[in-house]
Structure formats: structure tokens, C-alpha cells
Length: 576
Image (cartoon, rainbow, N blue to C red; front, side):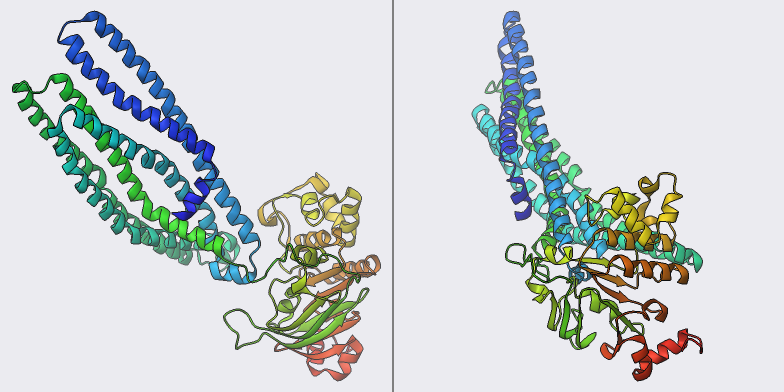
């Protein structure tokens, strides 16, 4: 609830407008029965046509004013609710952009998507209902009770007796539905997870003919969600019938008591009619409040999930205010006795006592068996993770002391899986340098061997890329990702197995152009193919998280058994 109130309080001017609308709306709703009482008692029963016309015109005017007040109230409430959901989603998105891989592993992507979409929507609906019910109900109830007490104290006590029953019912329904609300949102996470896996892995699923298995997985979790929803709605479904039962019972009692008093000449017809209207407004306000109580458990669960995301402290600090932004050196990388373990597995280091240096103009390559820690090693430089012990230095400064944006501005990180965004080819290439000219794009495309297929596109650099780059081949996506990194013109290039989808000829041409065009930059290459790295200035061989060899291709062929075995499995006898 604190989260909802904090965001709602940002819009005090709309809250004030809503309060004014509520005050006017309640005044009108209470005023109409009062006028109706005068019409019946003074105009109709006493046969006063002039007074009747005057009172009818007054009632119409009051109703028009009431309509205006309700419009103001609805407008203010809608603006607050829509602004609240906008702010919550913006804050969540900004927060998740600062998450490290550790936080993504902790929350899971499907849960974060549910939190940003479904949970935020639940908050919006609750806020809109809360602003209407929570403001109207107390004002309407107090005003109605005062008017009933003023008209007839006997009816006042009859209505008062129903209030504890209404409150008890609301609290009971809220308490019983809360566990199901939490279960609903958790199950929705699982639905999102299976949907994401099913859509992103569609080709694999079809290749293995496992559509039926995926359908069964989805049906199972969907059936669970349906069952939880049914149990919750079963509880909620008694709300409206229960309120109407209480309402009708109250009306019957009031009519019975009123008829007796009219018969005894202690009450007139107009007063009874007005009292019934007051009772209707009071009970209807309570019914609106009951809807709010029914919605509260699910909104509370959603708010807790959102708050958990917003309150989480990223394990990697950004140092936006105190971090270093500039250095005298450029392109220097040093690993000093670096050991790294993934969060949750501190007893199993992925990297152990890694030490090496890289200087401007050098090409440093990393090779080793699958799972030896090559990708993890290069991810420590842009601080995707932080080291467990030791230090990673860029230009002589520990990466943890940098303003994280300044650190990453010095790098171009090109992962193996090329991630392209929906938009034009040009927009994707400008991702790291928004003001890049068309000449810079062409140069980068030529170096990355992407110019040929871009020129064959109908719209060239304005050609649209569909979601995930599904209208491009794997090699084309990888070349565009490389071109995007080149456009940025950083001090350090990190190629994390970024040439794996290229054929040998394209790979060779691309690497040749890279050496020619970016001579002064530092280049780190993670690769599986000997042919990709054999001309590197230094090759670092990893095995089970440790460096087992450093040197040129020729040196390692003579003194590193692990490297020789890798080379022997890929090269012919003549090449060896």
C-alpha cells in the first residue's frame, strides 16, 4: 500500500480536483432526495403546481451540476491512475537496466516482464477504484447517516446495525482471497516463461517434433492458473449477492417501520422516500468499498512484487557521482590474480588466479575447451560481473572505481549471439553512436563484410529489421553486430566468439580489415577456431578456469599441450 500511496501522492493537483469532485458529487446525491422530499410533502400533497415546477427545475439544475462534478472526479482519477502506471513501469524499466546478470538470475526475465505488465496493470485498476470508492464511501456514509438521523432516529439505528455485518464480510473476503491472488501472479510468471521459451525456441521444438510436449506443458500451467482463478472468483462471487441481500433486507425493514410510522402520523411519505434514497447511497457506497477490498489482495501482491524489484540493490554499483570518467592512458587492460565464482556457487571458482596484460594495438586471443571460462573472463571487463578476488584494471584504474557508463563507453562488446533490435539497419548500427554519419556506417559495414548484402537490400541502411533479426541469416546478424561495434570507435574491442557464424573466407577478410583499420585499439578475441586467432599477438589458453599457456601460435605449438591438442583436432598435418 505504501508503494501505491507514494506514487499517487505525486499528483496532488489531480487529487485536489478529485476531492472537489467528490464533495460536489456527494452534495448533489444527498441533495436530490432532500428536494424529492419537499416535492412530495410540500408540492404534490398540498397541490402547489408553482412550487412543483420550481422544485423540479431546481432538481434538474442540481443533477446537471452533479454530472459536472462526476466528470471532474472521473477525469482526475483516470489521469492519476494512468500516470501512476506510467511512472511505475518507467521506474521498473530503468531499474532493470541497471541490473547485473546476478539480478536477472535472481528474478528471472519472465517474472520481470509480468511485474512490468500485469502487476502494474493491477495497480492501475486498483488506484482508479480506490480513488473513487475510498473517497466517496466515507463522505457519502457520514452525510447519509446525518440526513437519516435528522429525518428519523429509528431508521438511523436500523441502518447502523448493518454496518458491522458489511465490514465483517469485506474483511473475510479480502483475507480468504489473498493467498489465491499471490498464487495467481506466480502462476502467471510460469505462463510467461513457457510462452517465451515456446516462441523463441520454435525452430528447435519443430526440429525435434516436440510440439505436443510443449502444448502439454502450457496446458498444465494454464490449467493451474484457471483452477486458482476459479477458487478466487468463487469467493469473490458472493460479494454482490450478499450486498444485495443486505440491501433488500434493509429496504424491507425500513418500509415496514416507515409504513407503521406513516400510519401513526409520525412520519410523512416524502421523508420515507428520502430516507430510502439515503440508505441506497450508503449501502451502494459500501458495495463499492467491498469491490475495493476484493481487489486489494491481488493489488497488494502485485505491489510487493514491484517493490521487491525497485528496492533491490544491484550487486554492481554504477558510481554515477563519484566514479572516474577520464584517464590519461587509453586501451590498457590488466588482470591481477583474478578469481571469480558465480553468485550462489562461491566454492566453485570459474576462473582461478588469472593474470595478463593487453596494450593498445595488440590483439589478445582466448581459446580453450567449452566451459573453461573464456566468455566469463571477458565479461568481467565491462562489469557484467565483479571479480571475487583480484583486480581488473582498464587504463591502470580498477573497473570498480569507474563511472560504469564511462567504463562501457571505452568498450565495444560483440557477443556470440548477435542481438539486433526492431528498427532499420542504420538505427541498429548507430546504437553505440547515435550521431554517426552515413559515411561511418558504410565504412563499418565494409570492414565487417556487411556492405554487399546491405547494398542488395531495397532500402539499404533504411531496411527494416524485424524482431530479433528474424529476416536475416545468422552470419548477416553477426556481421551487423560487428559493424555496430566498429561504428562506436572505442579504445577496446571485445569479440566473444563473434566470428563463429562466418565462413572461413569471410572470417579471414574481416579479420584482415580489422587489423588494417583499427591499429591503435586493443582487441580481445574469444574463439574456438585456431584459424581465427593464429595471427594474434598473444594467445591465452584456458583449461578448467586456469591459464595453462600464453604466447604466439608458434610458441604454444611447442610448449602447450592443451593448445597443441586443439590445433591437432582442427588443422591438417601440413598446417601443423
